[in-house]
Length: 183
Image (cartoon, rainbow, N blue to C red; front, top):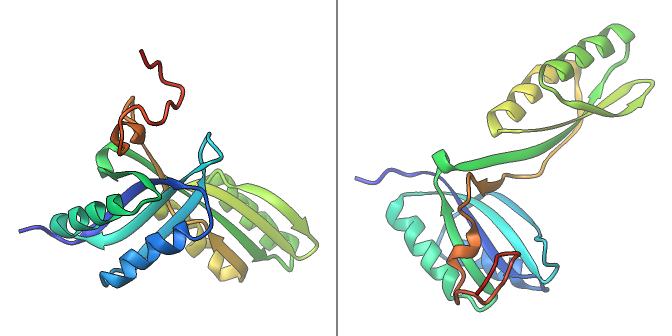
């Protein structure tokens, strides 16, 4: 029996108003909560890449993928296998550091996690870290004792490892020539 687990979908869409709304409505109409969502343009400013994470089993994710492919502004949909994907998110954390001793402890934690200190004030340090979800959660839990003033996480972004790309799954092969040699 298929088991429900967190699945990562990578979707290429037209970069225009209303497309993200159309995609997210599809998930809500089908009764799925989007666990993580990240959107940004690709090397072609006319195309955006959406990384969506959702809890689903094999049958459900195939249904969602097929429904996404039917949307006009969608060029490609690819399910990213966890063992063949690089998944990362950015976390920004503003931490309360009322004393230099606490500031030094926060700096030590930042160093252990290879986080960058991107802003300093007399009573705060702002950290930035890119990593897997578990790493982001771990640093968040460690600095919580000092007082988190603000925190934001981007949501997961992902790419396949190796030479496989999302462009292999476009609706019409060869429709987009993203730096590949087409003969």
